[in-house]
Length: 187
Image: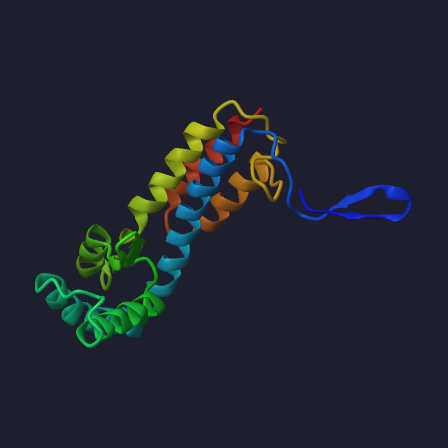
């Protein structure tokens, strides 16, 4: 916990602390929360933004060829070009790339859904990732007290689920309903 010494030797807390759940559970909740937030954010970038969708489709063409040809991103010429394309793609439609120990690369299942639904049903592109986050929260927060602090930022279970229900409502009413039901079940 971050603390500052106050007059008289006391301390004041400032925003980060120890949640009421184990650190492993808080980490899992944070992971689910990031999945929901990132999916909603990425969906916001394509819903009603036909130019972003068109640009991402243009960027995916040479990236798909580079993947097929197994271009090594450590190659200063070809790899630098591929990395620039990946960076632009990530700036245009976040979530179509993934980062791991081998560097940044296309997220194949999400790219596939993007190419299928990006223009016609953009809310379907990131639905699986958001649904996975909702499912994690349902498992992790089952029978958790509403006022239990479940993040290192000390958000309560009720606050977190309410926010996620609001974030998902415009894009995925089915997920918002599940989160509303979860919120109602918190004790």
